[in-house]
Amino acid sequence: MNIIVPHQIRKKELGGAVAVEVRKLFAKLKEKPELAAGISAPGLPSRTTLHKVYATTESGARRLLFFCRRPMPVSASGGAPQTPAATTDRWVLLFYRDKSDSVGKNMSPKNADFTRQLAKNLSLAIQDIANSTADNPRYDLF
Amino acid sequence: MKTLDDSSTKDVVAIKRTISKTLRSRLRGRGVTVASIARDTGTSRTAIRRVLDEDNTSITLHTMVKTAFSLGYRVRLILEPSIEKIERVAPPVEVEPLMRKLGESLDRLPMRR
Image 1 (cartoon, rainbow over the protein chains, first blue to last red):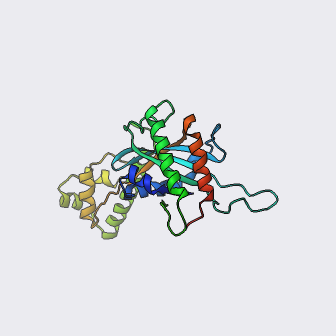
Image 2: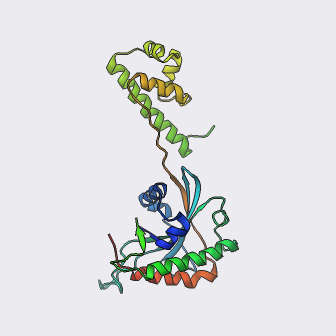
Image 3: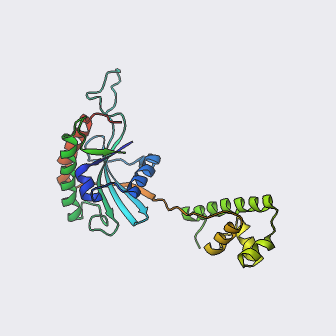
């Protein structure tokens, strides 16, 4: 699993830098991808899920939201997939919030604040990912 | 009182076992008695026995640290973040086009080491 933090999300959600406690959390998450196993997502674009992570850090309870994209399956005939890029799940950080934050306390479509800020953060992530090049990546990789 | 099924209780038991085992081993290695440690630390033999008993988790941090110190150890605690669970979130209908677009952008993103 790759965890991707687009630079604009890093600035907005993490205050500009990926703190040690966040790095530790990412490492834990990569140790336990099975925690997310079995999570299906009817109604979402194919190979796509939104994962909410309940975490506790030294600074308190945190709620993270990731956009998860699974790799494109290799065709049965053995041919290469349309794009050779991804071979592993890619998790893009969208939110890193306090449990009691207006978004962190209720990450569901019923929360208008969540919906509004999710649209904003998805747009920021798209900008950074779409404009990244090999020489100038606009994201951090964990 | 929490049950042993609770993960935090399991952590407490594991930590205490490790500490008690290490201290008992040092105690034997040095040929020191419980009574002498009690004297060194200014506490009772019963309190020292509780520290050395791997099944007894009802000890004070102070007694544990003093006992370890008298046997030549320093106790350091490290707090690590934990992940309780991960669950799927239903996306609002309004953001589905954005999610599709981000997915496509990720598919085009070259691998990076």
